[in-house]
Length: 350
Image (cartoon, rainbow, N blue to C red; front, side, top):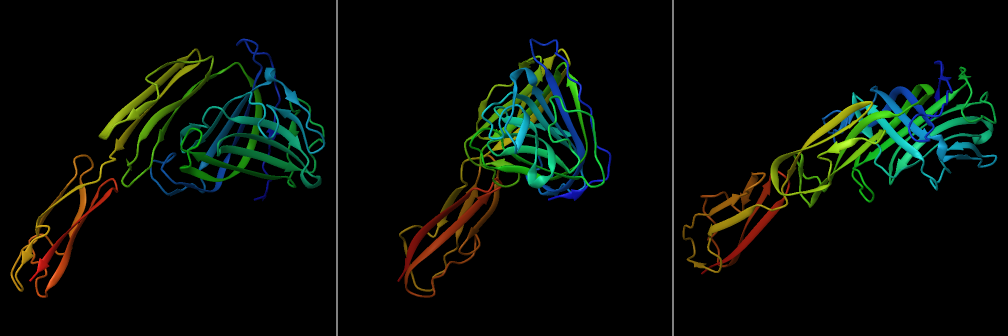
């Protein structure tokens, strides 16, 4: 989408060699409002399905200019961080913050800051992405200088400028397809500054199949994305397989010279279906026509507990014996994690 943009946008370009190794760190920070979006899993709000429209956001991208920049020609040029296709990956950090919750795009991403000329207009674009997770923000302007230098010069937007952006966060790690949140961004300002490093940020990634009520119902793993320059020291940040549990707390902390960060997550896992026991009717038994036989069955679940236990008739009610022939009796049970089990017995009426 494209939106008329009348607010002031200033690009302040300051680049110095940092004191950390030979890095030349530059930080691009977009701030604005989510134009539309959904927090599918409650990643930012704690409430799955929350409409993110109107929430404020900050999107931060940090590049190490010592890794180089390149010229892509007439359509994409002055690129910092490698080609638009991600052949080079010197971006060192990218974070989106919504509702006070900061989430890093998981490690191994490609990123770029670039000027480009779409359809005769010029644009300043910044992006970071990894296996579907992405933050992209850009401003279009007929007035943007065609050949912006690195670092970019001071730029003030006009009323004719248009802005756009988007984000999509998946459930961490390559190959995962659970989308946690996505939406469109309306950037209001962009600043570019030099930095000497950045404090740690810790983001938990729980990988598994979500059932109901916050329970995972498949093999589940927790891993952590830890960023920071200088490299932080960490504790409790190992990747772990999570056993069936009613709720286990995992904590990761990280510290460097610029600060400390930590995060905790409680994970519930139940991969086992409920157990169903049918006492009556007895499988393979013959009952007399019009005899009274009361159904008897139970359902149990050791981890998440039984949500429902339903038979062909209610427990304690009379089963069907009013006609001759072979009959089936079925009990279905669902636990609070969403696992479903069924059991069927057969009986004969003579």
